[in-house]
Length: 309
Image (cartoon, rainbow, N blue to C red; front, top):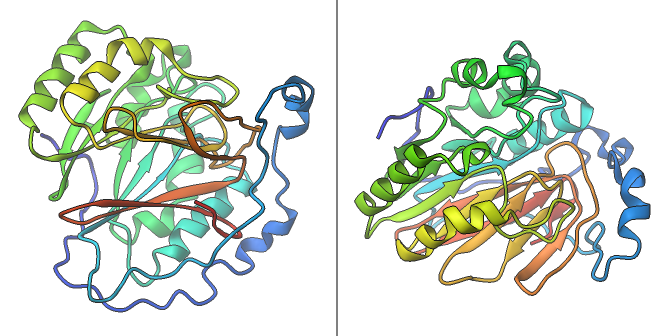
C-alpha cells in the first residue's frame, strides 16, 4: 500500500486539549448564507422528510485525556469553490485541530469546480486547508464527477499527489481505501478492491469515494455503487464508507455492519431528506471528525455553530 504525499503524525500520548472558542465566531460565519438552497427549494418543497439546517448544536468537547484516540481524521467533500464559505470551513478544521493536529485530511471529491482544472488546486485545496496540512495532516483525496471533466483527472491526481485514481494506505489502526466512483464499472478497480479488502481482513477499514451508495439527498443513492461495491463492503466487513456528491450531511443506520456517511457540505448546500436507511441528516456547512481507537470508531459532524451529530 502506497502512501500519498504528506506526513502522518503518529502519537502514543496526547495532551489534554483546550477547545475554548473553537466554535465561536469563526470568520464571521453569520454572513455565510448557504449557497444554492433557494435554487432547489421549489424542487424539494413537496418531498416528504425534507430536512434543512439542524436546530440543536452541542459544544465540541475534547476526547477523554485518559483515553485519547490513536488516530484522528477530518473528512469533507465538495469543497472546490475556493470561495469564502470553503475558506471558513478550512479554518474551522484547522481550529478544531489547533492543539491536537489531525493525522489526515480526507477530501471526498469535487475538489475543483466546475471541471477539475488542476491549475486551481492551490486555490481550492492547498490554500483553504493550509492550516490543517501545515500541521502535518496527510492529504487523502478522491476524485468527483467535476474533477474528471475535460480530461483533467490525470492532472488533478498529479497535482494532489495521489498514488493513482484508486489507492490504499495503512494508517496504523485502520486501512484507508480511496476509490474512483467515476469509474464504478471499471473491472480493474473492482478486482483491485476485492484483493485489497481480502488483504485487509481482520483490520478496521474506512473507504472514501464521491458518489454515495445510500443517500436521501438531491442526487440520491447511486445504484451503480450499490451493485458494484456494496456487496464487497458487506462481505469483507468494511466499517465505514465516506462519500460526498450530495451537498449535505447524512449518516445511515448500520447496514449489514457498515455505516455510510455523506459529507458534501464543505462549501455549498442543498436541502436533504430522509429514507428508511437514514439515522441523521441535515443541510449544514460542516466537516466530519473521525476518531479511531483499537476497539471503535467515533464520528462527530462539526458545523460552524457546533457539533450536530
